[in-house]
Image: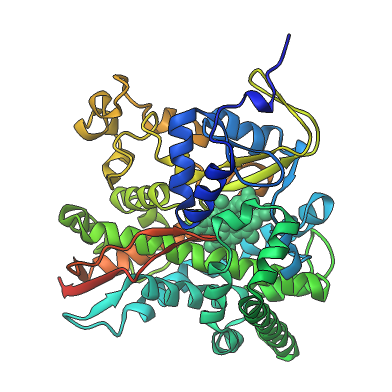
Length: 471
Ligand code: HEM
C-alpha cells in the first residue's frame, strides 16, 4: 500500500498564511476552526518549526490522545517544564505515572472526606455579600469562589488563610495570559527569540512566576510546621505523609504538584462557570429551571450528592458551557515514531493538534454549535427542532448524547493525562449554579459582549458584567 505524506495534507501554506495566523493569534481557536472547515479533518497548520497537523475527527483524536498515547510526547511544555519541572502537568513516563498515582489517591480521599461540605460552604460565603441591583463581574465572582475552594482542598483548614493571603491573583492571571495560542505552537528557539525581543515584559513575568512559586514554598513550610488534628483531608498533608502508593513526596515534587493543582483547577473552573452564568443570563427559561433545581439544594452536604444526580438542567447547562467554552481549548502531541493515520504516513516529530474548540463546534456532532442550548444534553434531545436533522445542515440527525463518539466532546482531555480534577469540578460547578440561581436572577448589562481570547486557557476579552435581581 502506498501512503500519502505530510506534503499531501491540505491546508494553508506560505509566509502570508503564517503571518495571518500570527496576527490572529488571540483568535487561534477560530483560526483552527476555519482551517478545519476549509481543508477537512486532517489539515496542515502553518506555524513555524516542526510540521503541525490539525485533527478534527473524534476517531483520530482518540487515537492520538488515548489509544496510541504511548507513541507521543507532550508538545510545547517547555514553559511549563521551566516553571514546575517535577509537577504532573509537565512530566512524562514513569515520573508522570508516579506523580499521577499519588495525586489521584490524595484527591479521592479529599473528595470523599471534605469536598461536599466545603463546596457548599465556599459557594455560600462567595455569594453572601450580594445586594439587589449590584453589578457583578461573573469571572471575578467565580475566581473568588474557586480560589477559596482550591486553598481549602490543598491545605488543612487551619492554614487556608495562609495560601489565600499569600498568593497574588493578579500574578497568576498574568502568567496564564502571557502564553497565547500561537506561542504554544512555535519551536523553543523562536520562543526564546520572542521572549528576548520583549525583554522588559519577559523579565516581569519571570519575576512574577518566581514570586508565586516562592510564596507557595514558604506557605508549605509554614503549614508543615503546624500541628493539625483529625484524619488528614487536604492534599498537602496527604502527600506529605505518604500513602499505600508510596512514601512522602519530596519537597520539590510537592511544590510543583500543588502549583499544578492550583493552576489546573482554579482558573479553568472559574472560566467555564463564568461563561455558564453569562449564557444563562441571556436565557430566562434556563434561569428558571436552574432556580427550581437550586431551591432543592440541601443544607446537608451529603444529600447534595444525590441532588447533583437529579438536577438535569444544572448538568445540561454545565455540559453546554464546557462544549462552547472549554477552558483547555487545544492539546498538542508530538510523535516519537513514524505514525500511520488513515492513509497517511507521518514522520517522527510531527505535531498533532487536537482542539476542543474546533470539534465541539462541529455541526456533525452539535447542530447550531454557536447557540447556547442546554436542551441538547437532556433526554430526548434528538427530537428537538433546534438540534435535529434540519439544523445539522447535513440532512442527518446528530447522534444522541449516549451514542455520540466519546471524543466528539472532550473538555477534560482523554487517555493517560485525563483531567485529575473532573470529579471536583462536577461538584463545584453544580453547587455554584444551584446556590446562585436559587436566590438571584441575572440581567445582562447592555452593551457588554465579552468574547473568548485564546491564551493558555480561554480568557474573556472584557469583564462579563450582569445585574443581580433577587428572586
Ligand atoms: C472546567 C474545569 C476543568 C477543565 C476544562 C480541565 C481540563 C483539563 C484538560 C483538558 C486536561 C488534559 C491536559 C493534557 O492532556 O495535556 C486536564 C488535566 C489536568 N487537570 Fe483539569 N480541568 C478542569 C478542572 C480541574 C480541576 C478542578 C483540577 C484539580 C483540582 C484539575 C487538575 C488537572 C490536572 C492535575 C491535570 C494533569 C493530568 C496529567 O497530566 O496527568 N483540573 N484538565
